Image: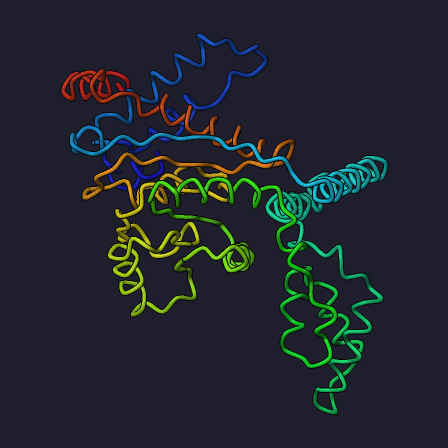
Length: 359
């Protein structure tokens, strides 16, 4: 509606308050399903004359089918224990804020992000590297650094790093080799267990895979996972040079021996064409389902010859399940507002209805 106010000011001049009331609940009245249905009909009546919407299924009749599958991943015992400890910590923190009558939004975003990290991989939070280990490592780093490097500053910087970042730091300094994490620590993740099952199945079938994550550091850990298991892969994220991107895309499309193409969900824009892949794995999902759908469209587009299947990896009993429900609600709202083009009323009739509404 804000966009319509901008592009058609003459039509909606001095009508904003009236239109906005359609979207507001009635005061002091219990809302009913019928009332909400009426509001949706009114909203569609206003917007539909201005919106021309065509889905791929409407214009690309030859496009292969795309199906979706939710893959529930059991967290590993240590991962689940860490996740539950975080839940208990933030629950207790909220109770303390209730007693102090503080705003409940304080620290809420931090809590959500920490839970998302742990559900994706336990090394995304600091757990294995204790404060004592960090001080030992800091001493070694200071010895190899400039004379003006201060021990307390090094400790401060390392304290805010997660386990995986500290693990990678060990390869940059002599004497820290003994502090590197083991392969078992890298593989200790519920989503990795399911990912291996899927990739082995796809490799056997001769399929190619796109794997998406919201976070670059998740791709860093997945890259170690691929190297440990010997999976062939390419990678494109926000740090990939523009002049190198098309070469990576062409290499993947032309070489069927490359099993996986890894991307950050929003990297590269909608122009990326990876139609040689017919499997899509969303390692972690977005609150906005349309961002995930755009990612899927990297291979489900003109030129695709095979049916495409998308797999969403969801950690069991975690914030992933809550995010999935939020996605479902947003898609439901989108379906209510946009409706089915084939069932919509004629454009002229809607324009007449709009005129009568404002009069």
